[in-house]
Image (cartoon, rainbow, N blue to C red; front, side, top):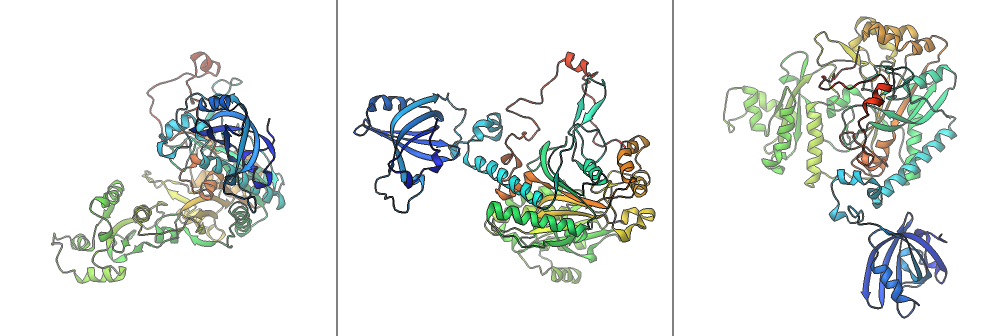
Length: 601
């Protein structure tokens, strides 16, 4: 139907007769004798010109063009010409040429659009756009994002193939096992009342592939989690999954660093330096209040032992130089709301209020600081006009993101909005976070119940192995996260390959019930039949593409994402099943049942 695409035409085609197909936009009837139309396809756009003195049948063409609605599909035939004032010398862009139309054919007259995807100023809210996703995807920025995703995925596949990895698909119909997040269950008529589960990740399958002797596995894997959503989460997502045998943690990190270098070079033509910086979990939470810190700016947290009220409590401070002068009282509201929403945090808006908090004697804001306060202010290099926040937290097995860590992230965002903090978009600071605690104390457990920080298959650091049997809360795991500019791109670990250690973790540390331990029996059996030492990592492809395209939401890099509440507004799913269909699966709907927030043990 076409001889060329709109995007490939340039001055080298001047004088040629071409046939094009695409969406008509910006019809401009300048006079009774002159009409311009912008024609767009998947590869670019070009200007069409139909003029009375040059074209036979102009009256009919003009009538057709005037009736075109936005994004009507047309086919045209015409001659390529330079735009007035341009010369062919050195020209190769579609901006420099136009098509002198001889024939116009309407292929599909578009009905009035719910919104015009090409007019940014009148863009509707996200729910409207998701309900008409095929229109939303016509936006140039989303077209670019999806094409970047395709290019990055191809670069990843090429790299993995060049480095000896075998692409292996693993089942999507798995079984329910307590690995962390909630799973989606899939009932089956073959066994009424029984369910498959969609995999949270191919974790167990890839470990079993190592036991099978494949040595190097990878997969662009679909994963599913039935959990609360936000901008960087989707119920179904994609990860670059890999596993390797007979390797150390450093071997896996080096492969991942080379992969990142290849992707950035291929997609953005940027050379990334390696090896990446490494930082322990303890240092990250101490200095930045987060296990995925953005290290492109300062605002580091300082610990103040002098303020600690108990031996297992640490007091910390975050100082924003000149912050009391930068932010108005109203602009401080987001900070105070965040503090109020975090139990146990104390927030102070300037250094004089710190004096009142320390002395606890109701002194006035203008009172001379005490010697103790002077010592602390000197430690922080604080001065009048600075903005100061103080918080206390547990010194051991702390949450990954502390109160001051959240305040630091918020402060950086607000300072950027006010032009007080400049972070170049092309600055990429990759960081490995290591030495996580292997187990975390559950916040709502009265018996100090431990849960796996990453997943229950992570191997302990070798020198901490004796502590596994005496004080498991102090054991560090061989877990490593890859962080970029405050975003966790992926995480991995060396795995437990000793079946006795794995069984001990299930039974004596995590206290899994016999029924739940039995759900992992296939994995323990595989470990005991000659499984090599192995480890791996999973890189979030959606998050990776979001960083590459400077997108704020994962929904902007996924062709057909779910809404913020997990619905497909275009396909209208999930949808209710009829009683008859449920009966086929041995199911019935029970309303008003409480929803458990914890996985079964």
